[in-house]
Picture 1 (cartoon, rainbow, N blue to C red):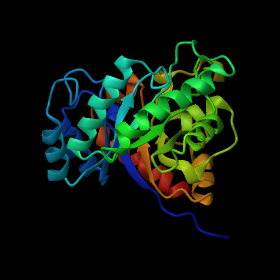
Picture 2 (picture 1 turned 30 degrees about the horizontal axis):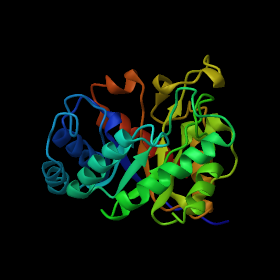
Picture 3 (picture 1 turned 135 degrees about the vertical axis):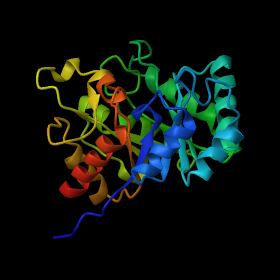
Picture 4 (picture 1 turned 60 degrees about the horizontal axis):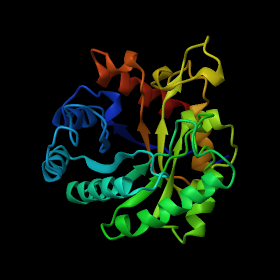
Length: 273
């Protein structure tokens, strides 16, 4: 029986959103993680506070951390002049900071979901994004969301859209274990997956249809999403990239010792694999 590869890990700044970027990179190194995702939605941090991209890149390099993505261009599949301008600004920031990719998050408010409409919108946006990202050496990583109201729930639809606009290589997919579980789509598309987001749901009372971001904690033995099974399946299908912790629960954000909690989760995952 083949032995699963031990995975590499990354930290999304959402693990400890109150930490300044330099302290966040120090947290990465404290738990033995050499890859990180920065975000553009944390007040008083990184992009939102106006810190220059070159400074963020320098902080990461000094900590021995590589930046794997900026998370994220929101509503990417609602392609407007304003969205194009936002994409250019984020791609410029990624290039200057040395971030390898820009995560692309679809509209998630119940609009744009009609059959035919959502496929067209995805292709229009990807066509617009392709030269912006390619010219800057930044990969676009599409992250379908599993929520019923999302305009792009299916990784198959995302993969088809990427193929249709000749975007393989310029774009990839994010496999988020939370959203994969909610979407109920069995296909993995490991060969197109550039990043895996991991988080668990431990609350025994919340129904699947009622799971939301605040339920997302670190992965442990109470996990209901079968993170271990998903990771094993992805590895068996050829995925060899990082597993990036992305918990949204206030219970995680308020931890006095996030390093210890993260180390425990890493140890749990490695032991099960």
